[in-house]
Length: 197
Image (cartoon, helix red, strand yellow):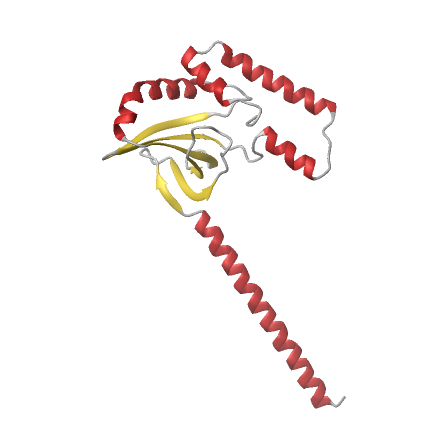
């Protein structure tokens, strides 16, 4: 191969490498744009502390929650979950408003290491629709059931020590809600089925 042919081959390889790098940069830009879309702030709490983002959180196994989004706690600098419960009509909410407030006031007071923390709630009542928004701790690993499914998919088994620890945590949490206000106890107890542990 002559010097001219070698130079042409090197130039062609350099051109292909530049094209590949540009294509990779475009893919990175697209992924970054998607990531920015998910972190876009859609709404802010009345106090300004919590910022709802576009990224949805899978809460299908929790009865009553219509939608859940990842949010940012601007005071603590941690991710939380922005949960929404929709009422079909404003009058339906007004009929249940006192009960809703009592339940959420009690949930916010509930402090236990093995129960998801409720931070704050508020009602958003507009014209003829209403929703209750409440902020909870974000559990990135999901429910125990989701974790076990992932583990099973990876053909891993959990050792007896882990099972004992989980059982102890579950029993401890159940013991702490046992003595609660009967309304709250029935609400919290109804939510804890084998599907959402």
